[in-house]
Image: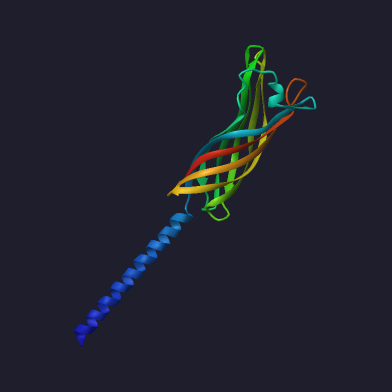
Length: 207
């Protein structure tokens, strides 16, 4: 009888230890998921609607490069998105992006480019998949006509949405559409504001 009791006690203790270990592991997983992580990503794709306002006149990149030879497509690059994960839903960090187009005007190289250097938030309502993002920070526009060039600094904002398709643990293919607008201290020779949209195919790693 005493031997049977000892076996039962050992079995009960083993089960209790097993359940405790499992619970501790589950709690550790939860704690890890609640802790800070990090992310990094990039992307490239077509730009659209790139334009700036000068002396009250709205000028598209295509308008400014009208008559140019060897004109390139309007290309947008999400150079880098990187930062920390405050939770499984919310990422905060830096977003650097640009849109550019070039060609030759009267035989001279011409180039137009808008750059964003923004602090950004990315929110995943369901922790993965669909996301929304927004940002604000520094921006500038570079206008080189081949004869003269000018760079104007200002303030920019961004809104966007996308989808992160997980292909392996932490690795995601992303599809993102963004719109950004920039404001400058304009003058008779410098833009007052600018804007552009972009559709990116990219990559993101989340840890």
